[in-house]
Image 1 (cartoon, rainbow, N blue to C red):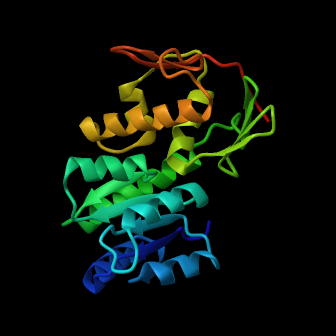
Image 2: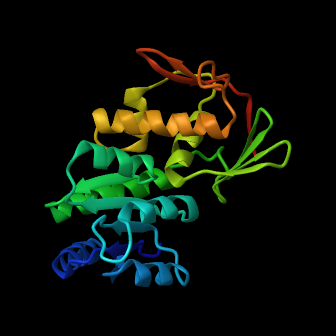
Length: 234
C-alpha cells in the first residue's frame, strides 16, 4: 500500500516543520505550503488523501478555502487553528471540515486523528458502492453529486456525504447521536452536535425536504434520526 499523502497549509514555518517531521516519522508522505495560491496550484497536479489547513492565511480566507475543498476535493479536511472559539469550530465543521484541531497541539494527536479518519474512510461496507438510489435520487459518492429523477444535479460536500452515506447504509434504523459520533469521529460535545444538525439540515434542503415535516430524514427527539427512504446500491 502506498504512503498516504498529507498536504500541510500553514504560513508558520515552524508549524509546517513540526507537522511534516511527525507525519514523515509516522509513515506518511507530506508536502508543505505557506500560501493558499501555491497550495491550490499543487492540487491541480496531485490529489492528497488529507489536507491540514490553517485558517489564518495571508492570501486567502481559510474558511472559504475549506468550503471549496469540501465541495471539490475528495480529501479528508482537517483544520488546525489557533481560533478556539466554539463558533469558529462549528463554522469550520459546517463548511465541510472533517475535524478541527486547536493550536497549540501535540503532534502525536494530529497523527492519531489523521489515522482515525483514514481508517474510517477505508472501512466502507462491501455492500456499499459509490452509487446509491433512493426515492427518485441518485447519490454519486465518487463525484459528490446528487442527481434527481428530473436530471437536476445538486453537489454535496465530503462532510455532508459522510452523513448521507451513514443514513443510506442503515435505512429505517434509528441512529443515535452516540452512534453518529462513533461512526464519524471527532470529539462529542456541543460543537459536534451543532455541526451534525447543520449537515442534516443542509441535506434535507438539497433533497427538497419540508423542514417542518421531512419525509426522508426524521428526527426522533431525544433519540436520534431515522432515514425512511427505500435504498438500493449499485
